[in-house]
Image (cartoon, helix red, strand yellow):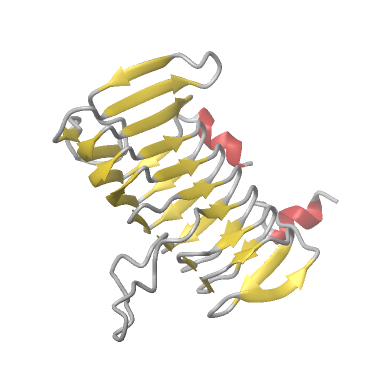
Length: 236
């Protein structure tokens, strides 16, 4: 069902200029043919997706056939060696990606993944994010891969909240309306984060529903479909 979206023409959906912002040298944006692997360097936005890069040795890769983007921005600031890779056939609407203040941050989104709208994704302080294939994110999603500011012990002056490993969302995961994913959070394949829930730890068991604040397992042995309940029932 979701794949049918990409038979439509990807039209420009915002009024921003067609010129990306690149404030320093050594930053590159590539379109990559997903069949041949051939890379073509570009120096402009693509329809629905604006690029802003302030730093050096940062790379953005967009695989073709290009997905459907609507009013989205990738903003890289004060970074060195950041790597953003969006696979082919993804759908992003009203998404703001902030890669900020660090070295070698990574943001990977695999093919057929969708964000319905209003997502804020912050990848700060040497942290990373990897979202698997065919994931579905509802509206008003928040993802923070680090705390953004220092928390320290008053007696020893020791930092207490260093960034942790990459926040990883497995293949075919569904994140409900208002879901929040924070540092240390993660889901295994075929899992669901319930609406308005807060994910602060990694769950390695697949086929689960996690819910609450903080999220915990509320059901196991499940899977989900992009079809509505009626559509799913009627196809049996």
